[in-house]
Length: 349
Image (cartoon, one colour):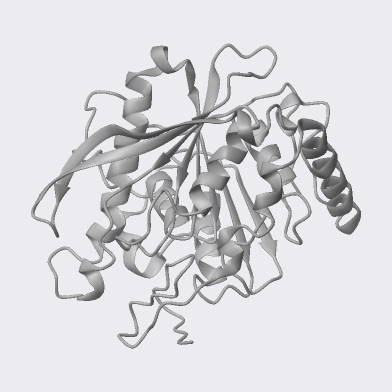
C-alpha cells in the first residue's frame, strides 16, 4: 500500500497525484458494506431497520437533531425492487481535451411511481460518483447505483451523472489546463445536467425549486466547487436554462483551497445550503478539505453543517441501516430543512 497525503481523490483506489509511485488500493467502505441486505427487505423491514438505527444513533449522541419521524420524507416509501432504472440518457455534449473530440454526456435515472403525500412533483437528487476523475471510475460502479436507488426509495427523482474525467490526463502536470480542467470540466457537465432537468421539468414531473446534489470523494469535491466556485456556465449543453441548485451534501469531498482559491465565490448569499460529512482520520481526502468548505460557506453566510465522524476510512457508509457509521437521518434532515420538504424547520447543533 502506498499512501500520500496530498491531492488524493479516489474513493475506491488510492491514486495520488503527488506520488508517481502510487498504486491502486481499495476501500471497502466506499462500496457500501451491508448494501446487499436492502435488496431482500420488505418496506416494513426497511422502516423497522431505519427506526432501530435512528434510535441507536440518537442514544449514542443525543445532542444531534435527526429528521422528525412525523415527516413523511424521513422514511422509505418503496422497496429496492420497485425502483425503475433508465440508463444512458444523453443530457449534453462537450469537447474532451484528452480525446480531442466531442463527448456525449449521459445520466441514469432512478424512479419509483410512488410519491410523498401532497407532492405532485418530486424533488431532485443528483448523484455524482467519485474515482479521482479517472476514466476507470463510472456511474455504474457499486456506490452510485446503490445511493441512487436509496434516495429514490425515499421519494426523490434521482439522476446519476457521467462526466468528463481528466484524472489520467492530468497525471502529467505539464498537460495543458491541468489541474483546472480536471476540477472544472465535471462542474460544467453537472451544470448542464441541471439545465437539462429544468428544460424537461414538465415531462419529468420534477420540482426544479428543489434540486440537491450528493457526491462522494471526487463527486463531493465537484459539487462543492459547483456551489462555491465561479467557473461560469460552460458549454456542455442546454444553454439558456438556469443551473441553480438548492442544497448539496459532500461525503469525503470538500474544497481544494490551495489550488482553487482564486475561483471562489465572494458574494454573501451566493452559496446554497451545504453539508459536509467527513472522517477526521480520512487519509485519502484529508479532513481539512471539509473544514475549508465549511469555512467558506460560513464566510458567505450560507446555511451549513459539518458532520464529523471519528474513523479513518474514506466515503464512510452513512446510509445503510445497521452500519456503524449510519447517519442518514441527518442527511435527510438536512434535505428536509434545506428544500423545505416538511413544515417543520430543523435546527442543527
